[in-house]
Amino acid sequence: MFRRHARADRAFREAQRAGQALLAMHSEWPAPDLSGPDTTVAPAAAAEPPVVHDFLPPDLRAPSRQDVAGFMMRWDPPLVIDGEVHTCPTCGAYRDWIVFCMRDDSVWLRCRAGHQMRESRLDTAWYNCNSGPVDQWHPTLGDGLRYLGH
Image: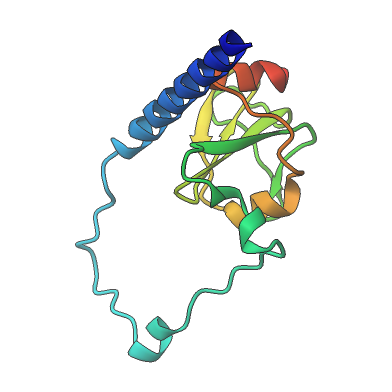
């Protein structure tokens, strides 16, 4: 009985380490250059919070747990963003994506060939509107990809 709990705890710790490594990989990218033209915002516009069209209550939104690196879902049909079909810039694939929603409100796409790219036109609100409930916890990224068929 106790061995099962120890294995589950060990798997959970390994998943946390893998998630932290994934987040560390994304945080190593250089910060954008903000020294360009003056982009000051009027005080009235800065006081208003941005409008996010997210119909889910806060406790069901994707980046709700601090111990989870992100969420993933499978997207089989062609992915249409802003009226055009999104294709992988490396291999030209246009369907069968894995969509990742990370804690930092970024959305990443992975094609069947394993090419990954950040998609700035998608956000957590889009992910929440198009994903179903979380039905499985995966200790590693590889386990999650196998579960989703990649």
